[in-house]
Image (tube, rainbow, N blue to C red; front, side, top):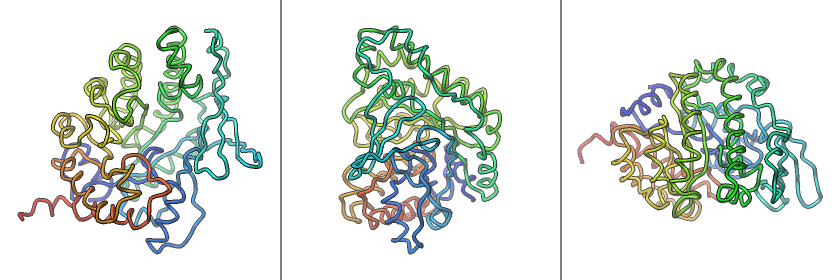
Length: 389
């Protein structure tokens, strides 16, 4: 099997030759640039200056030699957006700073690994409703955003690799938080719903503008379409399931219905961290095919239970190793055992793609990354799994 055949089999809930492996096809399945440098050295590959696919998170775009050495099956298409395009970064002495196309100011102190939002453009306590319409929103439907992506996709396809396409803005909930400020948006949802809904509607409009521009050019060369938002915490949800169903689910349903119309042959991937179990039936109902990252240490997200209850309707993408404690701080033997247990729960019957719980961070030792990969190779081989003890 080549990589694309392997992924398509898994997405069809069939067991391919081995569990497909993703590293770096999206901004939520990637690797920090410092960890990437360590991984290359551990693999005996020459040092390079990594290309960044996401400046905010400092995520490296894996090079072809790493893809080949590790047998990565999925390649990502990264449209031009506020994390990788037109970044006028200013050196403030002790920090780097830039203001993006949304009007959001990001800052990265020089002793810190990432950029963070330090100023939201619509963070006034008493923001008038008219300010939403008056804000200079970016042109998400600009065809320049997908320049060269069709050629990339065709090159990946020619090498037998599967192709993932992501959007140009964060989730409806998350992007509204970035523009309005998290505290202000949560207060709006509780006490000024008309303002909150105006922001949510604008996020949906901007998402649709991108997909309606991009997919007529790319739908026939992509296998998976990535969307995302963040509704979960470690123990529950950021908003109640009732509020999700009333305010967010209808907008997501409209988005996913349009994706299905524009790209009927592509599978729809949805990312949300944290405890998501109460919302999973709603996501299935609106047309989500793939759930990421499978945050297995969050409340209600035990992998065997997820597979039992939702494995016929969803593909699970991620959850292959616990990334908060085991991957950065465990011994290689602990990493391998964690991978073994998670594969035993999630891989049987297909419907599973291996990745970590979110991005591999800068503090992960190279030995643990290699232990993760070795365990995937040992325990993710379906032919070996089928052999009697």
